[in-house]
Amino acid sequence: MESVDISVTGRHVDVSNKIRSYAEEKASKLPRFFDRVQAINVILEKERDQMSVEMIVLAAGTPNFVAKEVGPDAHACIDLLVDKMERQLTKHKEKLKNHKHSGHSAETAVDND
Image (cartoon, rainbow, N blue to C red; front, side):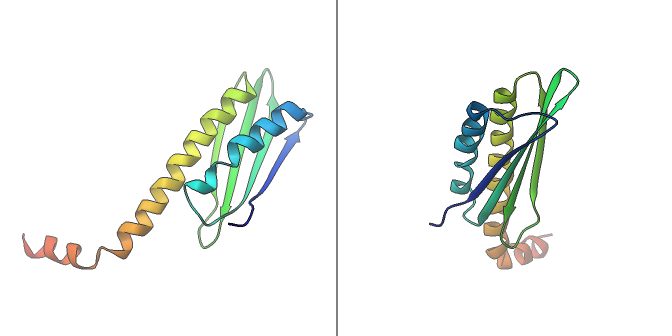
């Protein structure tokens, strides 16, 4: 399995090594949920007294997956974002899997009416 490019950047905020490594560690688990993941961008931004964290997952053959979380603690935002991304990627993978096998079930559902 090839490695996924993970970048952690800050807008109007310096990203500490602690936050950077935490974000990289958490984001590195996402390719488990969808094997076409190519790159993950984590963008941290300071908004007044809150941290805004956005995660963009680029995967082959799909639109980008995007999630954003705002809160006082960047670590908590990253945790919530990873959960959101896991759900998005899993849902997309299920949709692809179900789409491939839906040939006959759609027709039989119409015939039974």
